[in-house]
Image (cartoon, rainbow, N blue to C red; front, side, top):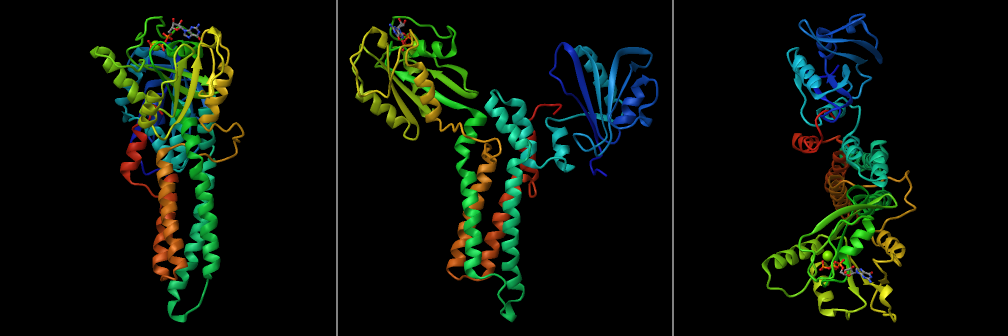
Length: 450
Ligand SMILES: Nc1nc2c(ncn2[C@@H]2O[C@H](COP(=O)(O)OP(=O)(O)OP(=O)(O)O)[C@@H](O)[C@H]2O)c(=O)[nH]1
Ligand SMILES: [Mg+2]
């Protein structure tokens, strides 16, 4: 039986006009509440779970809409509670009236993510799976969708659960020894304990190493197109987007503001930032644009440093860009090779944003630079969420401490505390241990009705 008393409702489909709208109701009073406003062949209170019923919604004597009502009985529903889904004609006025009618029948409007929060509280999903629900909805590319699905299917949860059991096992030996301290019995030798910790540490490190790729899967790669004016940055953006998005002209200083667009390369999301050409200028508008270019360089994962065949490589500018972003990959590009070019070793790649020559190599290079691993299997657990990454890092630190204490023959009490902390950090990922703050932070980012 659920310990949540309120019954909640929300529109589950996008607000606006469409073929149908779906209103979701969940909680103990859901079936009775819908029964009060619905007239069908028979009462919903006697309907079986997972059945669909045709009928009409009434507001007193006024017929609001003819609808299909689907009944799900606890615990076999998304939330784990009794739930009803009402499919109406897709007019927002109908949905609004039905939501209002429900709120007069012991039902309140749901908060963002409240259905999924209930699914978590009723053990239908663990926390990392609940977080994946939001990612599945917001994924923009096939790859990020695949990653989110992989997490929703519980791949990460399974791995974390497995490591947590191994740790619990090791910790219980250490704790047994503490319980029998006076008898001086040994339940686990130092060598054995170290081997177990090392084993788990290695697995945690492998998981942590998937994060850079996981983040890219989920959020995409930021790519800044930079260089002096007129080298063809906007032309390259347009070529990659296959549309005339940015203004291109032979006048240097055409692009003033950042132009941000997304493109999917082999299913992976790349966020392109076309920037104002970098040069000395007294024009305040252009200067502001150049400041924004610098910001784009700082937050880029990959910088495309572009020049054209008519200008010498600007080493000073390149050094400046390098100073702005030391951690990211910089790819040097020579554009306009259709105008003739004699070969220059200073560039990683040469291309023409006019004819498209060399663009295929640029695309490959972008994928390689972003560490996109095409061999990534859908069966490997990938960490894509910052919260999970932080929990794993914390676990790694605690395990390293436990390792050090063990090597230094410290008292079992110290080792046990570190092992327990490591276990809790893993538990936080799947929601075995969580604070209300963490939960609120996660679920308020959801949309209403999910
Ligand atoms: N022949 C040739 N011309 C190009 C190529 N790429 C761009 N151009 C031309 O170069 C000029 C400048 O192109 P833009 O794309 O506006 O250059 P930009 O780097 O964005 O310039 P700013 O916005 O001023 O910094 C335009 O006249 C383009 O048509 C290329 O590959 N070959
Ligand atoms: Mg431009």
